[in-house]
Amino acid sequence: MQKRVAIARAIALNPKYLFCDEPNSGLDPKTSIMIDELLSDITHEYGMTTIINTHDMNSVLGIGEHIVFINKGHCDWQGNDKTIFKSKSQSLNDFVFASKLFQEVKLFLEREYQAEE
Image (cartoon, rainbow, N blue to C red; front, top):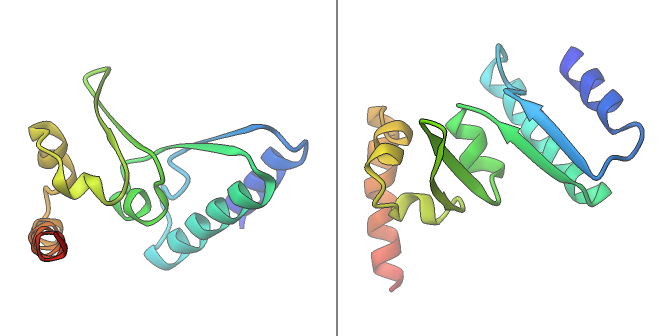
């Protein structure tokens, strides 16, 4: 509830930009999805740009329309939720696909994308 109240306060004056720092920090997966959907809905409904700083790859892949990976203070990679799986950036791949689950998802999606081409 506190996260939703914070978001409501942040959009009360109809800003052009909404900045969120780890909006899903400390939340269970189901509530995290709800916050992601809320942020996505208000971004589109109010026509604002929402910038989210997060380490939550579920959020990045779930609602990220333009993703920027910053490594050691520099922009290492830019793209979207589809092109992230085709990235040749070793630092991005080491970070995003660190878990066995995400490694398997990447392999599956790479095969899917190849079949479409």
